[in-house]
Amino acid sequence: MKTAGMRAADLRLSDLFSFGPKGGVMRFAGERVLLFDAVALGLLRKQLIESFGYHAARAVLTRFGYGHGWRTAEALREGIPWADEREWRIAGGRLHRLWGLVTFEPVEPDGRPGPEPFADAIWHDSYEAEQHLLHLGQATEPVCWTLAGFASGYLSRVNGRPIFALEESCRGKGDAVCRMIGRSREEWGEAIVPHLPFYETDCLDASLRHVQRALRRAETRLLRAERLLSAGDEETEVPGLVARSEAMRSVVAMARRVARTNATVLLLGESGVGKERIARLVHDASPRVAGPMVAINCAAVPESLLESELFGHAKGAFSGAVTERAGLFEAARGGTLFLDEVGEIPLAMQAKLLRVLEEREVRRVGENRTRPIDVRIVAATHRNLAAAVAQGRFRQDLYFRLRVVEIAIPPLRERPEDILPIARRQLSEAAAREGEAPKELGKSACRALYEHAWPGNVRELVNAMERARILSEGPTIEGIDLPPEIGGAAAATTSREAGFSPRPLAEVERAHILATLAAEGGNRKEAAAKLGIGVATLYRKLKEYAEG
Ligand code: ZN
Image (cartoon, rainbow, N blue to C red; front, top):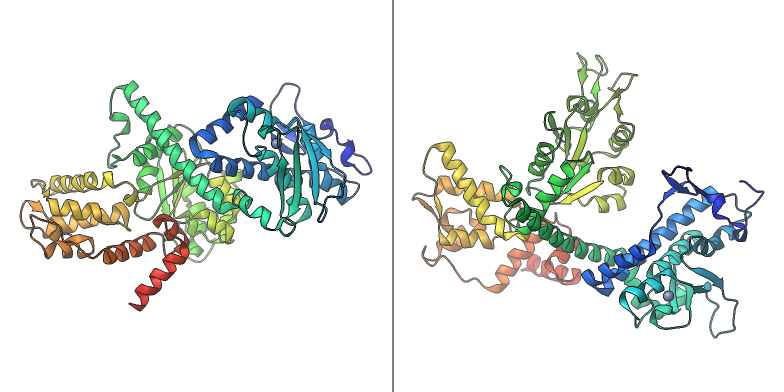
């Protein structure tokens, strides 16, 4: 239904909401929406608070509401012929009501001291206060986090500048009504400072990292339960992969679970953590195992060749194309295509890759016809793709298309339980290959391996063991046989039995900081976060090292 110009007060759900009589996809202003049960949302809130604490729960729910409000403003702008911009700007409150989240009543200026708030409203029947009281009882602070987030996101989008909505009073803490005040950062002044972290992505990132760790723990518990049920360890034993730590076990469990689907998988992790091994696991455990697994390191192929490598080319498409050739997308038909170092693909090529993934067909270079593709995509990168998106170096739409399921493989230093089993497996595999008795690991070697930060991860460990196996003379590998940076030098100064040489703490700290920085690819912010120190502290220490 179109009118000459829509007014916010005239909005009806029936104008915006569409769904087939027999069910299926529901849309609101053209965007897909879902119906949720309020109590289920209340339970989610309860779980968030109990698992991660108030702070993290509030951050997650505020940002969830913020994103919802922002997207709604966006959808409404395109979807409705507004009488004027103002009607669009004030429609957020009306929508809140239409959706049954809350009943919105604007408050007229009441002559309170100071400048008029940007937005001032009373919320009746907040679903959120109701659910909080139901599951968690009365709070000491306002609790309508998603609603405040929604108002902030909506107002920020329609006004083109950040507007922060806070509750002055809230049913959830025993007040008669919820009252929302929205102001800009400047208008709030100091009063907004304690609330800013809930809106900032830094805080969200920290919360999400916390959530991720907690999910991993939950995953591990689930895995244990599954193992008990299947009464065997086979499920987690993967040839060529050591997963002794809980973190790695949950990575394997996740990979196995996603393998059964056709979903695109994005593997994240530092260089050398074993991303290709997990990609192989996804393929091997999938219904596509009978098909080929084709891998390409996108960083190793020159930009000019990447397109014909992936999509193929016609005869004479370019100089050097003497015969026609199928690309890797076609070669992987019925199987899996592993795009390693996907973060290194140039922007122009990213657009072409996105089109292929969306349309599920390729066009060989120099050809006009398209060919359908039938591949599962597993992509991997050592880069922080979210940061690359923010810097404009990676397309956001491609990022979202790749990260349908994201699996983060932890660096070796975060799963020290895996270090010695990997080292021993390496020794026994080498011995089998060479037809000799496997060498043992001595105490000093174990200690050195355990204490090293492993910036090169599993790959560094495997190389170090191979070197030590060749250089060591007796049946036992000691610290002195390891590369000097790992502990050979330290062990050399002390007796082999003792195997430990005390070093000044400052020296250990320096080595650890530099190794962490290297492992983060020189990113000081990430390194500081990993080390649990402030960026300023890290800068000061690096300056000292540079001067010292
Ligand atoms: Zn409230």
